[in-house]
Length: 203
Image (cartoon, rainbow, N blue to C red; front, side, top):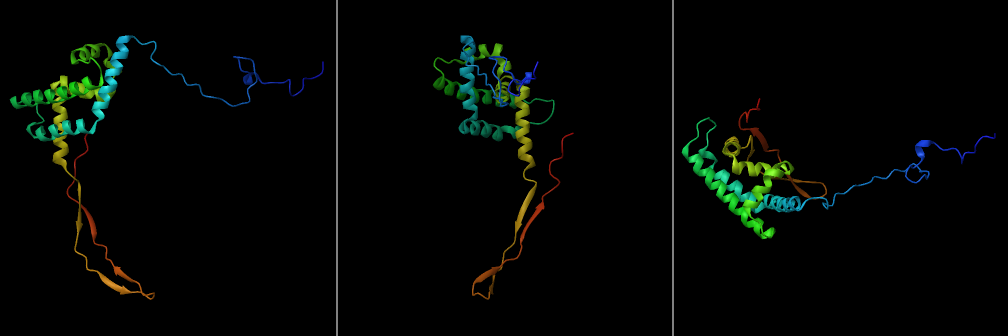
């Protein structure tokens, strides 16, 4: 039997098992996209609310409102096991501020939205939340989580910058160049020096 020609000899790895055609060696990535058609109505509703909630959280106006409250009230908190009465008052005000703002924004973005409905859906879908949404909701429901948020703001405020820039007055001398251009003879007077040891690394 005569040997097969080059056109008749093929590597098994180059055969497309789907249609039997010989591949040229180029591979194409196949993207599988979930269009959500298999999701239940409840899951689609939850995804819609969470998407709108993520938009609210990323809104600079909302972030400034929340951070402004934390910066204004964080000095009342101490890193100890004792919880003062004022902590509860601040926590209630924070919860009211954030919940009312979220409720208003989501009612504008999601037809028929209610916070009660969302909290009910949250029980069965909480594992699907992005970390930013989960952390925010946790700070509303868990006092200890809220206290840790306030202490982090207090630490940031107390640490401040770890360096300062010192500038000294500069006398400008005009040096005549051969080509007639006048250029200032500038001395190096910018100095950067540490203020202190800075925050210690956490162990």
